[in-house]
Length: 332
Image 1 (cartoon, rainbow, N blue to C red):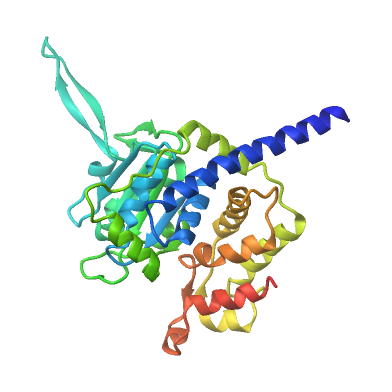
Image 2 (cartoon, rainbow, N blue to C red; image 1 turned 180 degrees about the horizontal axis):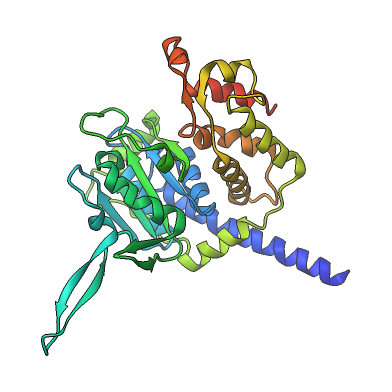
């Protein structure tokens, strides 16, 4: 019995230690990203859950700065790629070059691309062609890439934070559903409140601009990610996740509102995202187990890019947000 108590005490100490580190990371990010507390929490939840995030917002809302600050605070090797229509897959993954030795012997050598990092900032991902977008699919799902038939493993941990501009759509290529599903969350970023913008105005227009300090190392983050997957989830929370995901798909498990308005619903990856996200959110808040409130809070970022409204529903003015609000009511 003593050994069980010791093990339980050690697990609680590990959770408290990881939670304290994450709290320092959250505080450090808030010192340089103003008025976006919810966005910061969702980004940390995404990375803690071991997933990738799609950040959607107008220009000038510090999306690129957020990704850079996340890399610095979490101790990750961070790289940025500006996606453009002429970007090729090799510009992201890398390519093989022909080397000639001293005696004239020729051989191919792999030159890694920017995807070989721990945190990849894919800026304006929808500006690249579908062929280039798909180059990230294997990396995001399998954590390795294949070039010329040879497998190359990516560093650990590996995360993609991609950005999209919802305003300027000319010259863009919508992300295919298969790639959208790889993002654990869609994180919408809006304009900051007045006081936050006032603070940002003074802090960023002087001689010295604040830099977020490191709060964790990559090894500590990996340990926290592993710890996240050990957090117990009660049967009620698991049942709520399954119930709301299945209710979001048109069919016999859905009610009239969903069947009348939804063209297609979330895949089983949505269930996984809610389970991992709820665990990560609990750890971020210093709690020992997630609740149904965590599931309700994550419905919009997890579902928004995994559902489509039917043509007739769009004509009636219905949005994905309306359906998600209805689904959130099922958890009450």
